[in-house]
Amino acid sequence: MAENRSLPFFIVPRVGLEPTRGCPHTVLNRARKPIPPPRRDLTLPKISLFVNSKNLCYGNLMARIISILNQKGGTGKSTTSVNLPVFLAAMGKRVLLVDFDSQANATFSLGIDPKKLPLSVYHALMGQVTPSAIIRKTSFFGYEIMPASPDLAGATVELVSLKDREFKLDQTLEKVKDSYDFIIIDSPPSLGLLTLNALVASKEILIPVQCEYLALEGLEQLLATIDLVKNNLNKEVKITGALLTMYNRGNRLSRDVAKEVRRNFPGYVFDAVIPRAIVLAEAPKFGKPILQYAPASLATKAYRELAEEIINLETYNLKPITQEE
Ligand SMILES: Nc1ncnc2c1ncn2[C@@H]1O[C@H](COP(=O)(O)OP(=O)(O)OP(=O)(O)O)[C@@H](O)[C@H]1O
Ligand SMILES: [Mg+2]
Figure 1 (tube, rainbow, N blue to C red):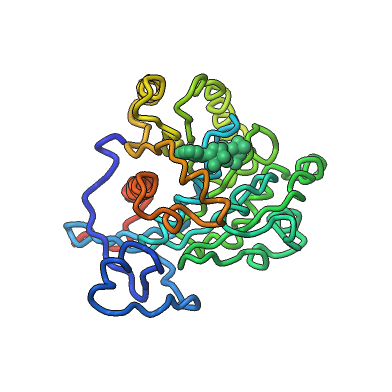
Figure 2: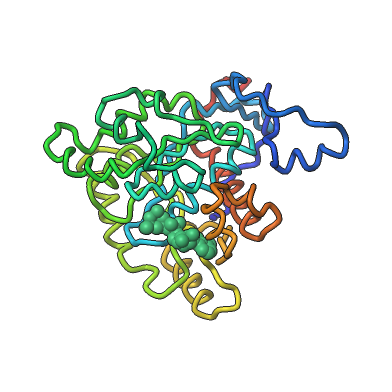
């Protein structure tokens, strides 16, 4: 990412946080003393605090809401949506994953059977239940999911006749966003009403770009849709970055596509590159994120780097909450 986008901040360790089972801290600490199981009912502090070199205190008062979006199918949206939050949570962030695709791939990838879900994001979207009634904990401390079920496909039709139809997800998340540092939205492969809802609800967009033929196809249309949301719906949404996925180091095509994407989005392509890795395709079958399924893999390292980059960009959104002396 562009150099000037990350500032040197000292991160104050957050009170009361315990390492997640299986996270790197656990492995490091295991040699010294046994780690008690995570206390799931621990009340987390509501604000992340940062102190800079002048002792100015900065606070992140609201969740960063990031849509993982690309209307092209199979670019790694769901894989990124499921795996990124694990690393954000391991770094002490409270994260909610919103599965906003009726295929419910993200829900399934976390070991929840979408077909057996009595209530899902669809019911919260339609105002039939409160969002907190459908949110579930995952096996990672600090990582929760608002699951989807195939019912969501019906929402596309039902929303059309409703007032403020583009704002339904925004209104739903409004009720829970103070409880999280990050809300990650997995979007469907289209530019329909559900995607529009995801865009309106988000402050940031992360675009996974597959390192294959026609990788950039449709991106112009996506950028035009983001502009439309900004201008017509009066919503401030910015592109956090494009993420290169399914990168095959030994393949010249992958290298060419990566070069092309970096040329088209200068300063907006994450340094982290997600490799093509069979473990990423296998993990959903076992309902496990990559950190649990293959902790030592290159894919795990890549998603950890992505989480670090995203957290480093956080300083952008921070507002000073103490005065300079
Ligand atoms: N880095 C990777 N290496 C290998 N396989 C991957 C990788 N990322 C994703 N896959 C696999 O590629 C397929 C598509 O990935 P994924 O479901 O994440 O894409 P998507 O953009 O969410 O698709 P859709 O547009 O249908 O929602 C899945 O089978 C997934 O397991
Ligand atoms: Mg998907």
